[in-house]
Image (cartoon, rainbow, N blue to C red; front, side, top):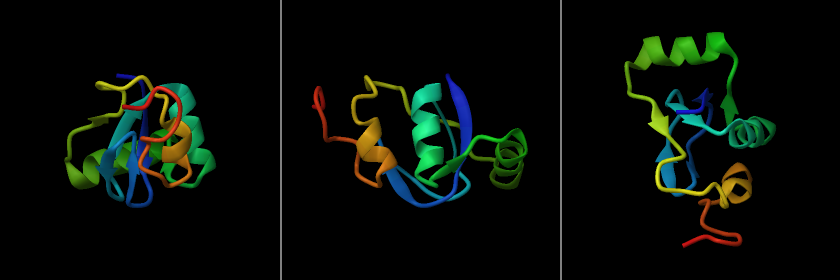
Length: 86
């Protein structure tokens, strides 16, 4: 698993539907893009709050994907656009 972040808004990331307060893990690059789009917060207190408040398992965004859809995900898309997407 990569860097963790708390999801701030309901969206699809690399084809995975997530909702506010989910904790996701992905590459540092993907998490940075999500933060830039206002969709996630990787600060340790934000992640700790979401983990404690929800008790949900961490969602691994890198499972089965090459990350090629990261830009679409950060823009609010479904992460299936772009070169190499299936």
